[in-house]
Length: 174
Image 1: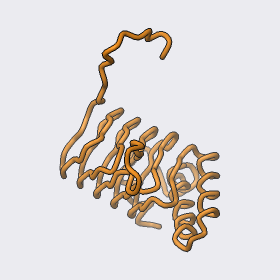
Image 2: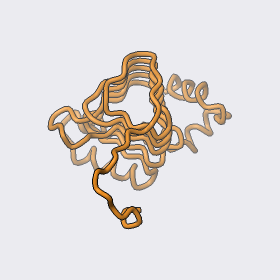
Image 3: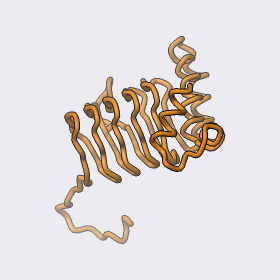
Image 4: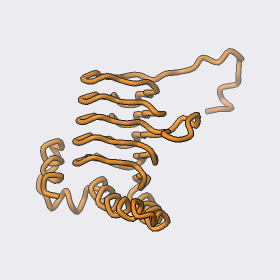
């Protein structure tokens, strides 16, 4: 536990002391309860695990499926809106900012969510989707949409947008 708190203090310049991190960081609380829920999930008490994580989502706005595999020292900074899907795998010392998602595309049926290496940083609002692999030391910029594998030590930025072929009334969709 101390290594976890120390890693957050080193990565967050706003962290003044360990008590502040324990009491006021919702990502820390979400990871704490995830670890308990994960233990229930592994012994086939999935409903209890899902109820625990449902309560975490309701209280902190951070959704982590208890089936996800999370390495040591994940830091969820300003966690509101973070989503981590059931088959996601997260390496050690990763950082996720608010509104980021490790989600599925709806096309896969078994392994549906991303695999992250170690020391991956996912910026605010970024979406990492599908059964893809993100290498070690990768930085994913804010609001980026990543649907492809990324090798080690890369930085990924930008959104993938689609141009509609038909003219549509945009006011209707906004």
